[in-house]
Length: 412
Image (cartoon, rainbow, N blue to C red; front, side, top):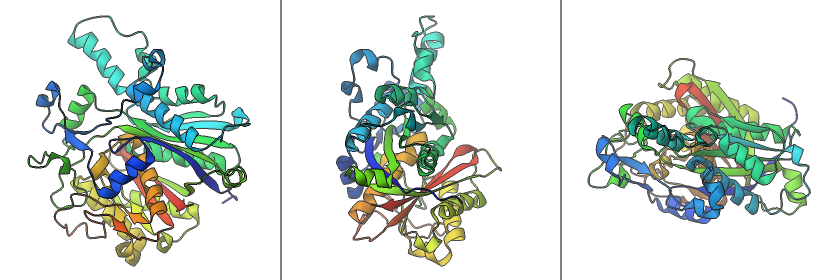
């Protein structure tokens, strides 16, 4: 493998069901608070499981009204997160050759809110008055395009759509560009806003959404618990600013951590059913990329969707790769709190992993009520674990279609 530069993460921006600042996000996650709730709209009556994890912050207020009208909700999230990542990175773009700065965004469903609205107008209302910018708002690369325009980033502008691993792929590919010296700066992450009526009904029909706990709806997503019944759709965005470590140090930037490695694999077996072999291969590739041995991983942020098959498969894959060390690694499944952000999940969970490293905490896997013999590792159940001296964390993203992506991150 060719020699690669160290790559620092010097800026982070987020908007999520757990908050729209790094501080708020971490406080909520550390406390185990859930952003999952019952959908409170008339359409909820048409859903078997009317559960969502939604963003409460009005991100549109941060933009000029004319611009906001041209943006689907997922693009609003992406632009908001990118803006705050650039601000957090403290003049990272100053004096930069803009042709050596790129944008890498992952999204699974793109502008589904815009497309859903257009179909409602066309088919539901029988009207031909479709918004003239429907295509420009709904296309998957809209978010990345707008980020490039907003910050005058003239290098590669890439959008990845590999379902639930999209933003992990985006970060990994951006890391490779910076580490190899092809770029000086990359904005990388993901955005998703899938809580449109048609999207919710389609996911509901797939029977992957968790059953509603009528006594405590916010606890309905239960990764690795024996009584788990499915995932909950979430929305939001997370963006990271990546740059060579030496450049970040030279300009006195605050460094949140670094990307150490990135691995991919394809299950090549089933469109929805995950495979132990595929997941193991992606984790092994990430370790090889980071030049680390399994015992050098101090923590794992699991894909942990809360579905019966996925959680059991991920457990077996971790055991297959880590051997005896698997039982000693704290594993966090944060989707129990923020829901499944689909294409943005990998980016948000990478941010949570970095925050956990910084604060020496293993974040909790909430609502783990009953142990499952098939899921018998250390999932940090129901309460954050303080004083965890972790220096490295593996963040897993395993997607429909069999597209697996794994990031290895290091503390600052």
